[in-house]
Length: 165
Image (cartoon, rainbow, N blue to C red):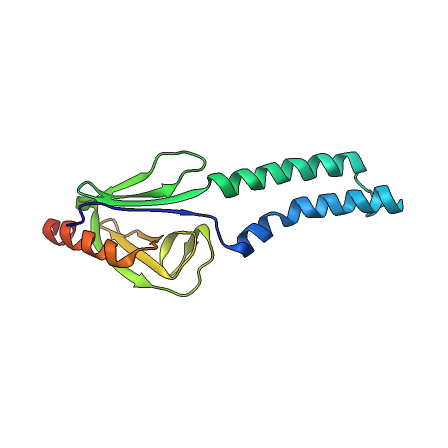
């Protein structure tokens, strides 16, 4: 019997990676146009050296985000722990006593990352159409993107149904 559900999601969609690397490509393109063709880009052009420096820095930043950013969802006897590991590695923990309603849902595209939705409340999502909708006893809503809904449902049945007040 499954006693703990653990889900770690990373940036892996090709379009997310392409979008992330578009800024460094822009800086390198401007530097190449200015160096090889001698055409200044813009009314007050940034020097080619600064374009290369910003290109390298933004490339390193994007690379680190892609390699390090992780959404974690853990369901166990203590409750539901969730969050991104950036900027702090600590996860938020909702104990079972704090949760009023919890259910697995399927939703349409909400974007990725952390944002606020009128319908779902705070959204933590990396990819996929499956989510864990939580409504706390204080009335706040949280939606956590998950990748293994059948395993999660088994774990929820074990803990949430036995802890209902």
